[in-house]
Length: 306
Ligand code: SF4
Image (tube, rainbow, N blue to C red):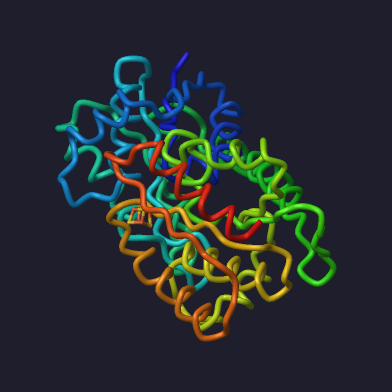
């Protein structure tokens, strides 16, 4: 049986249900890399240039950790995942960048996802993937269709925030944790932030709690214009939570060297300043960030909003 490796980094945090289900439907064995740890981070740092953003470095570490355990490592090439929306350039070149940085030590299986302009590329990729895995094209297409149904169902169930009906629980602190999913849900990179806040009985809201359309409507000042998909997600989430006064503050977790966040954070902070809005704490994480200093800043912020 063919074994497929799924690196626990980047898109994995958003689409793991889709791809795990897909390869399971194809009858493949799946190995997901371990949760991020120091060894994985160090391997990623070793193989990437200094200027590379932290999540991409970590992704390389995950790929290396799978190298000798699987037949292929699956790395989708996401160019656009919706109409008029594009991914960060790192995602567009991820399979090539990984192969190059790791000096072709791993066998990569990729799929091209370009929903905005060339949606048929997915079908072309599935044909090629079928050839590599020695499977019928129609079988591969059906496997993806079925996986997509499971994925959308799971996604809908997490969009549980009702922008116009949500009422703040006055007895509890509520915070919005913003950032890329591979930052806020990776417990090593986020220093277990969500877990620590949950232990203190703080209500947490993330971009996953809001449906896609609401986020795009509220993504001031870019509503409806071509933009990075993650930009819509973060701007839309920040202004949805704050316009409904459901949260007491925002913690924005940003990785070192993220070009997208450099823009997004600026827009959020400017708008908050001009409208005397909510307190926001920006926490930048890089490979040298220490947990003690990180926790101290969170504590100080909680004192302020509490
Ligand atoms: S969006 Fe930022 S963190 Fe994510 S891959 Fe691009 S540069 Fe890196």
